[in-house]
Image (cartoon, rainbow, N blue to C red):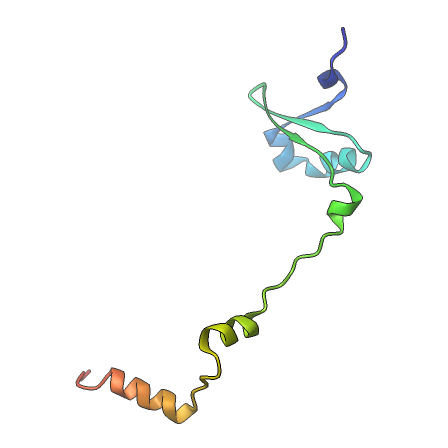
Length: 93
């Protein structure tokens, strides 16, 4: 009796490391690959669907985050220098 895994390509963890281009070719052809370590299956590798491959990474909006945290508090160079001087007041190096 044939099972699902008989038709699935098999690769080792070493193949992932040393021959990934071969596995990438199999994925491009639509194959699923069973990954084995010491003869035991550890994972199944499949290609992304067309929709999953098109997902874009959304960059965080750091300016909006700073605005939320600090609001309109913007310090001038003189303010920052005064704060730093006050922080080190009394210390002698």
